[in-house]
Length: 137
Image (tube, helix red, strand yellow):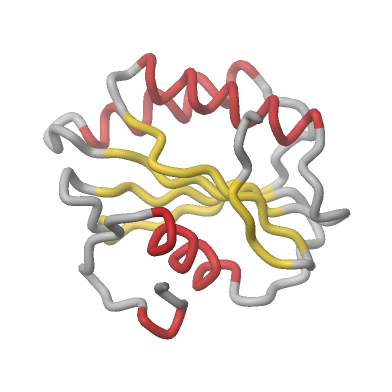
């Protein structure tokens, strides 16, 4: 199992455990005070590209304009990276259990990545209780 202490720059995140360890490395025990969406772009070998972006003040429900703009931005940034993917982490205050709004964000951002020919490598939910995968089931 990969832990956050095993994170090495430019190392491929080849499985779910490595993706989760990387998300935990980003979150690093923070107690979120507002909703922030973090995104990390991965090359075709699933190595993180050197840009990690937090988007602060994310509304509770997905905003179609914001979602569309993110999808377009990812497309433009990654157009010269065939096979690239995006790792997303929604950081927010509140309980660790995923909410309807959290799942709505996941669905909207999955659609945005797919609509631009990109893959959503993983979607994580980060709260004061830690980081966990947020899956649609």
